[in-house]
Amino acid sequence: MANTGSGSLATILFLFMFQAALHKGSLPVCSLWWMVCGCPENCRASSMVCPGAAQYPVVSQNLVTDNVSVVEGEMAIISCRVKDNDDSVIQLLNPNRQTIYFRDMRPLKDARFQLVNFSENELRVSLSNVSLSDEGRYVCQLYTDPPQEAYADITVLIPPGNPIIEARDEVLSEGNETEMTCTAMSSKPAATIRWMKGDKELPGKPRVDLTYDKMYTVTSRLTFTVSKEDDGVPVVCIVDHPAVKDFQAQKYLEVQYKPEVKIVVEFPQGLTREGENLELTCKAKGKPQPQRVNWVKVDDDVPSHAVITGADLYIENLNKSYNGTYRCMASNSVGESFDDYILYVYDAPTTTPKPTTASTTTTTIITTMSYPEANQDTAPSTEPAAHDSRAGEGAPRTVDHAVIGGVVAVVVFAMLCLLIVLGRYFARHKGTYFTHEAKGADDAADADTAIINAEGGHTNSDEKKEYYI
Image (tube, rainbow, N blue to C red):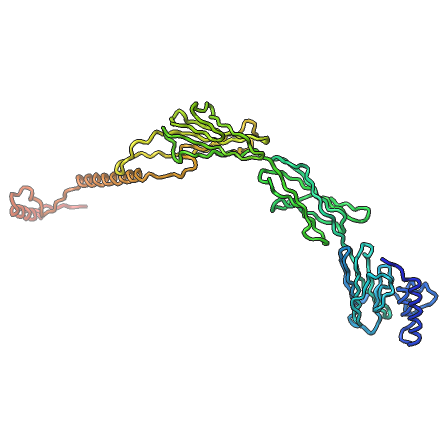
């Protein structure tokens, strides 16, 4: 900041104002000393004694101002406002208590200060091209008895340089741990650093260093373990500072991983039966991409007439001797993976069962098996489950309507037979009961005789009495 103007300029200004004041009688001599000296201490150091200068200024609610935060190189506005002014003089002092503006006059020879507004209730001044040396406490002063003061603190913000992100490893393997650092240099105040991996925020370990020029350098360190899903994911270092927004740097992860292997059944789509053909395709994906795949049969040899073409396995004219587990294996520089297919050959289909006859249905079972690698730890295997030809890989389960019809017919027939047998059983075991009127009817030759015998039975019934105690 320019500090000139306190010598010859002050003297000339003082003489000019002094003569004008004496001529008009409108400005006391003490006010001229306040304008030139800028503070009571300087006035007391002069040869003249000013009565008002013997009193220290006080902080008053009548005079207000605001603190200012400004980015280096930009413009700051300082406003001194008076609520109730009795025609007292307003002036603005710099942190060295030199007068910047006395009313609407600028004694200080610093062209960066410009008058924005002056009235009875406000003195507003702009400071352009702010530098770190301009930081400090500025004084708004209202010349009363005693003088009133208000303070405006100017804070200069210095943004950090472009963040620098560095990685310990350029190429990673899945399961490995890596470390990254992000540095934001020469800022004021110190910046804060955040980490994002994809859409997930990760915690870092910051370190703040104060440099020789009273600037701050912040370094954040991030440590994490990568997986194959992290390949191609950006890691972003975000710098938060009041002087800048959306300040960040990023680095994309490159993660290598062992192949992912899957066996796809091209033919048949349903059950595998004798006499049919089998075609399997092995699909392997990894980073780096595996160059070749191998087909083997677990605990046995691949049939001699099986045809292996690249990733395809083709077997003609299936029979039950081909049952077993067929394995596709793929490897790269990171590791080896495999997938299994369990072949179960069914009998060749004969005639289609009739809907009205009973038929036996075979329940198909999907068997999932997982074979860990020989050099793999005891951790749970991530290999895909084995495919089972008894269920038909990749094919939806189809229902034979003829078989269902036959089963339903058998069930209905069995229920009808059960009802008939039960009816005959109850009919045979039905009891025979006779009334008194029917007694004697068995030996009668005709109906009249039966009635007479029955009537006779009634006459005799009076002679037979039973007594119950």
